[in-house]
Image (cartoon, rainbow, N blue to C red; front, top):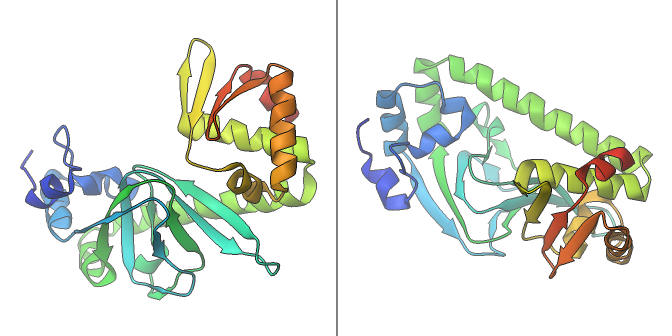
Length: 239
């Protein structure tokens, strides 16, 4: 595979992989096509707590996350934060902007130091004309995001607090967990308040329920941001 100067400089060309290949919609492209896309990329770094963009900003870029995690969120009428997605390496945002320039419907903030690569819509327009199969992948990603939002709405409106927390931890274990010796280590830079905001409960309720689960031996709380799941099957049964 040919080397990519842009990828080397952003630190994401590892083991011969172009950074663009981390985004599922580009994964099927040939090395030569990936090299062209990677050559158009602009590299950005954000410190923990920095905002990538605000709700209402013009959405004219495609973001590929190379390392770190970000959260996307909106504010309710009461001014409370509602987290929509937690995204990590290989995930992407701005897929809808590839179809039409518009405004971002949510905010995005770095949960930890983050490196991203961005592509402008104008550049992607040219690539899409040459690779129409990418459009199918975009539609698949839009479908998946809509399903996730529908599940979030259903969770917030129909499930009790224990089921919401169990579902949140189960999904975190699946997406961000390290499995070892029958246990799952969840190491994610979310405060108790942010976890509570994700599922529409108060911070006090979240802390109390987590402590109760620890007393029952279902999990262990290590500091403020690390959780060890001892009995994943118990969480699944509570959902």
